Amino acid sequence: MTKVTFSVHDGFITGFHITGHSSRSSRDEEGRIVCSAVSSAAYLVANTVTDVIGASADAAADDGDMHLEIRSHLFRLPAHYEGHGASHERTGFTV
Image (cartoon, rainbow, N blue to C red; front, side):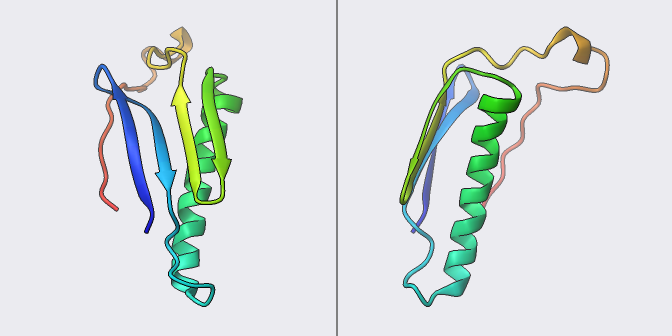
């Protein structure tokens, strides 16, 4: 089973910790697909935060374990985004 725990600070998500696997065995193709999708999404977020945005963050990954914790303040939009439809609004989702 895959478990995701989000870190929250002042009402904002500042990181996550993912543990486990979604596949039950090496023959569980559906579970491997889900596990790959979760891993892909997590790496996309981690690489966007650290490489695209350039935020300071602790990030590490190993088999069945990944975490990301943002150290820098990320929640203020750069001035060039003001007035261009950018929003601080966040919505949740259920998996």
